[in-house]
Length: 401
Image (cartoon, rainbow, N blue to C red; front, side, top):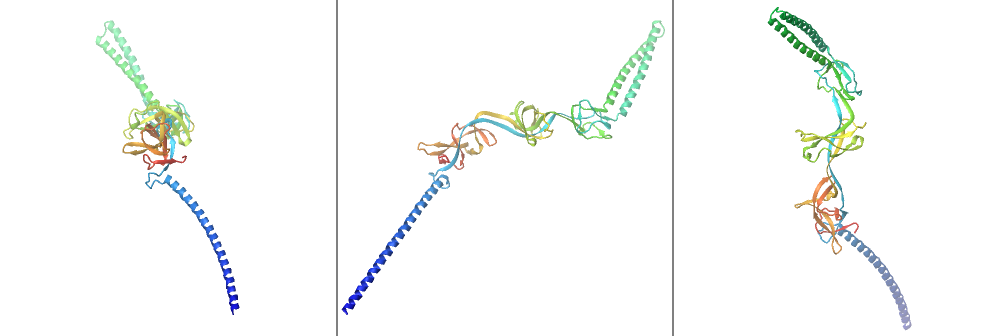
């Protein structure tokens, strides 16, 4: 029995030793696995912290909503320089010809008997364009000439009678009254003859007004009349255009009257034909239009087959120029109770950059640029992007920092 007990005890010891060995192996495997997992988690943590730090730095540059004065705002800058500045008055005008003539009869007009011109035809100055009914005028000329002939006969007879009376009076025959009467008759008929001659000339001139001639060389742009129709003064039924000399005509608001004078430079653009010309003001009207409250300016331009009267043109009248002026974008200029101001970048002694408010005195504005009279110096770093909601002394950075 004792032997059996010893055998059972030995068996338990052997089983216990095996179990302890297996438990130790399992523990070592678990530790290794956990260490590996911990190392991975720490590595991921470091990566996340690096990403978090990077995002925090980027937000510090662009986030201005937090109100933290230590935050840096990202801006864009441009060095202040000089350039020639010009201010123009932009207006719309039209092309016109120097010589445009609306043909009109010299007299009262009348019915057209013959037409000698067509639209598009080139005509010369003095060329006969049409003929009006002149029957009445010709009758007047004939009657005037007949009256003149009668007066000449009467005058010849009166002169002969006067001469005879003088001869008889010299012989002591007749009376002095008869001589004076004969003399008065001669003088009266001479005056009548003079008037009759003038009437004949007037009748001839009146008859000639039935012939209508061109006043200028040019092209018949409008011929709105036909045989049998009435051609009257002011009807503008025939228009002759001489396009050898053209001009631009525009109405300028009266507030510019002190800024424009004869000889002022003008840039003319004709959008329809993509043409650009340089000219000068050749004429300024001497009165203000009471309806449009403006005055007329003209600028001569050379003839061009592409240009037609009444064609739309754009005028840029140079009314101000400043060489070597400080010019900045107009959109960066802000306004407060003190006036106009901009922001520039200022470098501090510690190496940091801050926004500095600069009050400026503006000159003329044209397009998207403005002339700065005072307040800025050449070489200063003007803040051109991100200037909104800046304050004086705010920390700033640029994409090049």
